[in-house]
Image (cartoon, rainbow, N blue to C red; front, side, top):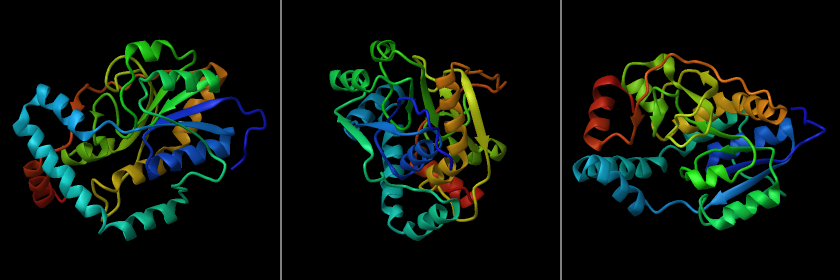
Length: 259
């Protein structure tokens, strides 16, 4: 890929993960060096307690079951993941010399110090916690979000899975949108759609969607740097989704073949 000779400061904020590094490396190839601000993941206990206040502990206990099941399943899917990586030419690890700044949270003083030091012209969120209003207001450039789902119909968690599980396979895809105070509610800039392949499942969809979405991430950042962002209307209804509870996950897998 051709590198932009006049690269501008780009920051990606993330908790990490192979699918995110695939996007970071693609952006670097096309637009120049990227500074990655790597936050410490929020503890699962905090996340689940907050979710239980909204949904109740019965629903959350089912989600915990799915999370445990998928974590166990990952060890049996290494070969399948490697195949997706190889077929799509993904680079799923940080390169030598990659600029990484570690912070405890994307809402911490350390994060804002890192933003000030980097002086970015564009910030891309990719798998990090939701920014507070105060944090968002303190970032002096466009803030975009890579979301592994088609918004606003599949906001929140596991957008690709839910599109398939609800019989809406034509909306298996990902979105880059502007960030506002809501959960994946910002104005849509680009969307990419595709199809999973036989053998893909909840644990592999992030890699599949990253492969589909590298170009839209590059395009959205390029537009932000040029000050030429053009939001689009999707005409889709809005709904926030979470992890499927384990009983629902197993039933959908057995009856629809969607895992």
